[in-house]
Structure formats: structure tokens, C-alpha cells
Length: 242
Image 1 (tube, rainbow, N blue to C red):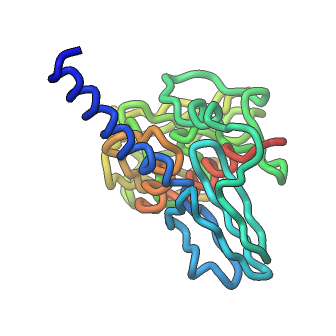
Image 2 (image 1 turned 45 degrees about the vertical axis):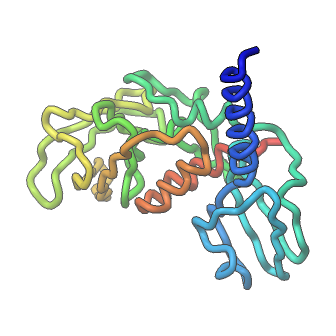
């Protein structure tokens, strides 16, 4: 091996050695926090893999990382390096996959611990939820409902203006297309969605510059942009079922 080749190999080895601890240093991000220590561990706080979390009686801390969601309860000192449970990275890939329009039926969705049906994809717009809605791709917008029985028609209006578009669900369908030609979506666009029950849902779209590959990085963006409903969906989907 030539002198220059040896120097190149040494430089690469040094780079790997320098960056590996940094990659391993992040254990995740706090996505929910309650109890006396909530100010110490607020939502959005990054935690390192070598950190030890000190919790008081009544504390509950939910931490999300690339392998899944952990719920830590006090009192006690908990080492984040001591991790158990299944790897949920596959669930993250499915949840954040950018899909074209397709039909979603009861058998294709999951519920949370309360039995409530949750959306199977993070980018589906839930007809029930008001507030900021983060999108990875504003050119592919789908409206989702948690039921399959009967037909349903929803009116879509920009702010308080007159109806500009409608979205129809067929019997047995949970998913329908958002008509972008009549209701264009961009960062900051605000729409009111109302169904036959007359309950309006006000949505403000937040478009992501890029889709992070790590769950904890996506969680931080959802927190920053106020997309708390999607943060809950992400956290639930990444929880170990076992």
C-alpha cells in the first residue's frame, strides 16, 4: 500500500471513530411528559444514550427513538442504554411511506389502547382533527375518516370563504382524494372541512422541507410545527405491542 493510500485509510478511520460516538449519543426525544419533573424533561428535549433519567413519584416520561417508544415512570433512576422490547423501525417506515390514492378498509388499520381507530399513514388528513397538519408531499393529499359504513360527503372551504371543493367517501371506504385543483395546498394554507354532522374542522397545512429518516428527528419537526396530533400517532405506532 502506498504512503498516500495509507494516509487516506487513516483519515477515513479517524472520521469514523470521531463520528460514531456522535451517532450513538442520541437516545431519542421526549414526546410526552407529566408530573413533577416535566419542567426538567419537557416535550422536545433530546436525550443521550448514556443519560440516566431521574424521575420522582408521579412522573411519566415518553421517549421516542429510532427503535420505538418507551414510557418511563417514576420514582427511580433509569438508564436509557438499558433498552428492551422489539425494534419498531419497520412500523415507522410504513407509517411515513408516501403513497398514492388507495382504498383503506377496516382490516388495514390499527387502534390504540382505547380501541379507537388510528390513521395508518402519518400524512393522511384526519377529518376529525383541527390544528396544524404536517405534509411531506403537498402534491399527494388524502382525506381519511375512521369509519367505513355508509357514504359521506365533506365540504372544503378556504378559511371562512365559500365552499371551493368537496370530498366524497364511498360505502366501505376510509380514504378519498383531496381535489388539489380546487383546493390547492401549500405551507400555511388554511381550510375548514365540514361533514353532514355540521362539525367543522379547521386545518392549517405545514409543508416539510424534507422527510427525516430518523423517528426522533421527525418528532422534533412535528413538535416545532405544532403538529401534535401526528406526534401522538407517531408515538403510538412506535410503541412495542409486546
